[in-house]
Image 1 (cartoon, rainbow, N blue to C red):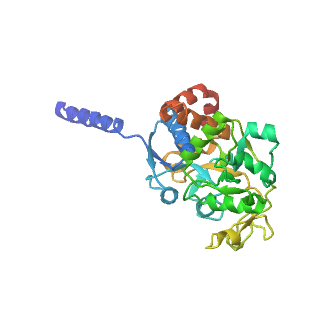
Image 2 (spheres, rainbow, N blue to C red):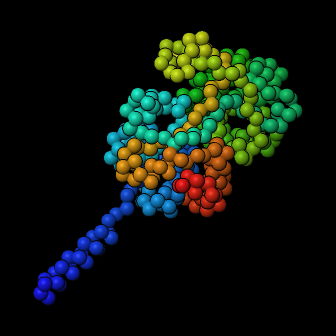
Image 3 (cartoon, rainbow, N blue to C red):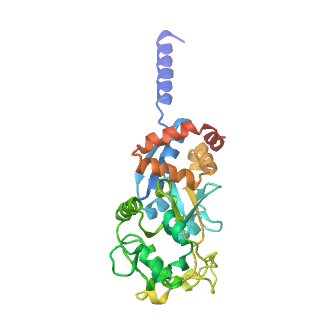
Length: 335
């Protein structure tokens, strides 16, 4: 080969090497939904994937319908839903994840468990023995939660626009305490401010809430006992795996929803998953394997939320600190 040809060959080889070196990392996109658990989980996932799996991770806000549609298409516009509450996502779960459906979306093997119900302060329970929702059907107990002096207690069924607002009022009717309490529908931020005031003054407060959430790390809260769940009733739940025509949980979202519904038990514990597009198994197989092995607890998620919401930690910094302090657990997810 003459000198000129050698020069051309060397240049071509160098050019090829530069081209290969400049290939961009695989991009993975997490969809952020509108609650604090999502914010916490997505930052932990992002930290682990960028640190250990050599991918670029982007977080974008989207509603759940858009996240499911994007994961189903598998084109990379959104790859991951960080916090799927199966109790409220039964239709997309059946369509995209469950066997017999499209199976275009996968989930981690071990979900954490989410719960909800009615809560009161620990000091009220310890002093007055209020332990069950049926205990609330007592005018003397209701007075403990009367803040405006009208003779009725107040309770928070949820924030404006939440589906749970109606459900919790149906529950109040089913448990018999609607006669002695009135629902007060205000924003989540307002009820948290009222909770802080109630604890400072050692007053009664009755409200609907769930786990995980930071308030359980900040306050001694007690969940009131409810009768055991025996199944969803009503025509709208036919085909649901927990359908029971004689079940204790019947909610009909009709014009006369309060009269047409009857709930006399608590909701079942919800399995909460990380969901991801099946396309990752080909595009980024190590990422898909990692996501399948992530195993969270409600206590972990509550702590993360507390650090962000109460301690004011930056979500990314919180995630970095937690991942560094829990390297053995993270190694299990990656192994």
